[in-house]
Image 1: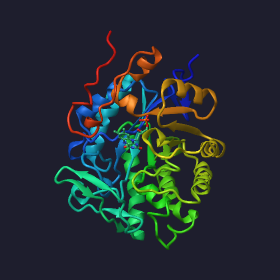
Image 2: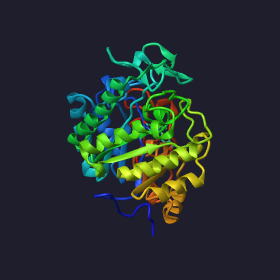
Image 3: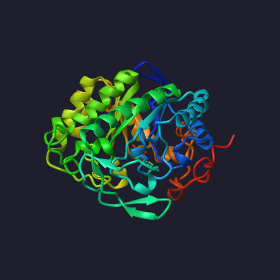
Length: 359
Ligand SMILES: Cc1cc2nc3c(=O)[nH]c(=O)nc-3n(C[C@H](O)[C@H](O)[C@H](O)COP(=O)(O)O)c2cc1C
């Protein structure tokens, strides 16, 4: 019997299966507002157990990439409401991923008046695509003041309220892949000497305060988090106390009572693997739902679920190219290959035109 395709629960939510559509930035939100093309895209994927949206900024300051959506205005909330309404008949539950890009940004991608912020004035190595001028080096962020930190925490809480009002079942804090929350966690990007920098207790303070504020806004059954221990994406180098730091985080997030932790392992994309010991630590320390992701096919998903390594499995690229992935994997049908050339380009091509199974 398949575990992957059997019903389960996520806190109080009933899921139609254990397959999660992983968050994927697709850069189709012209003007940073969700639109009907996005509603169509998400509705095509509604046979998942859970859909986690593309990274969505809680603040104008967090819109690091071109054409990513936000959750800080009434127009965005209305656009998202149309998305959740389109998805609901297909049965998937839906969480919004809140992604504040922080220093992984360029001013050309930000609306007038917005600021590139980070825990410290240290740029991420690498370049950022802008619609106006093509590739540009990542910006040097402004070091956030205490007031900036308080504002950002409030923006996460308000964005979560907008999301729930727009019909989402909850939100996922993007604490992975080198964005603002991880910029606070990691010592290479956080050089602060105040209560938000230095020891892991201090570097974890921002994420834990964001989690508490968002839980205060929408309730703990509606808040999950994505983390990437050992991840190096966006100039986040390995360091000696990585495993100890993330063990601390697993414990504290368990105390905070979040609904789920969603771990990223990007070894399928050429990054260092997350050691099995680290995944086991999260399983032991965190008592609610654990989601694993990265490089899964149906067979590996079944075997990790059967071994009790996780409760749900999240899949990105196979879902991107196969909106009916559940039906395909169930019937061992052939799958479409993803086209990286259209991952982030505007319009329907490579977005809503991947063919579904015939008949
Ligand atoms: C086009 C694309 C966009 C992505 N955008 C996000 C994102 O917005 N937030 C995030 O947490 N991960 C993002 N990821 C990472 C995926 O969620 C996932 O962790 C990664 O692709 C590995 O899973 P896979 O092997 O199933 O593709 C993105 C991946 C791809 C391919």
